[in-house]
Image 1 (cartoon, helix red, strand yellow):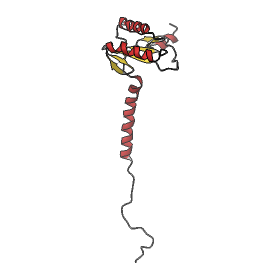
Image 2: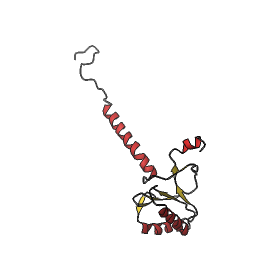
Image 3: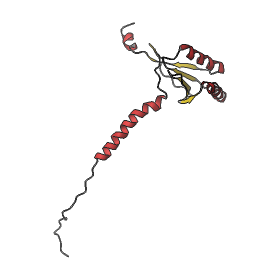
Image 4: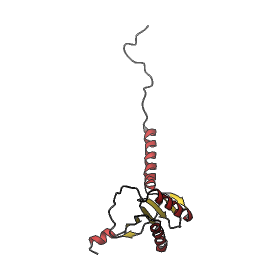
Length: 148
């Protein structure tokens, strides 16, 4: 056998091409950046604003969330539900855990009478804590800084 004198034969040297990997990772990153906020908040509604919102309080139980969109659709914890089934399910949830609190989220275009009626229905069922979820009013920080 002839020795090549310690030299490797000339040929193809393996190189790793990371460009396709980087492309896939960037696409996944963009997808998660778009999807993650929607998973967190549930149904998108424009909340009415107030000047001084309460700080977020953490309680022992996760409250139920009832959302009404500007189109009039009703959701119970991100699940669409008919208005007729809402009372029944709220009564069942309250019977299962009487300490359960409830949050009402309504789009700012929803009539106040609709939200007031829903609030009264939740109180009638017996929920110990019924809260209306609101956002901070646009320009509220500027008004507070100006002393208004």
